[in-house]
Length: 68
Image (cartoon, one colour):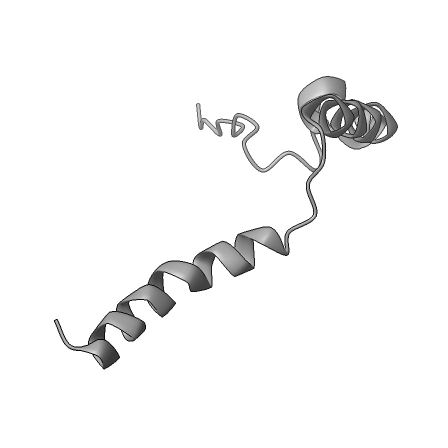
């Protein structure tokens, strides 16, 4: 392996490490607390928790029209 190809290969190895080193790390406990707080703040707008009104629910059962 020549010197320039070795340097190029090492740059490819080191570049992702530099990107990873620049990331802001957050503890899992803090991330979980933030997620819990977000969920509690937005629970009243979540149709899975509150239920969707029949007028705005696109998946409501369609009314069947029958002619006698």
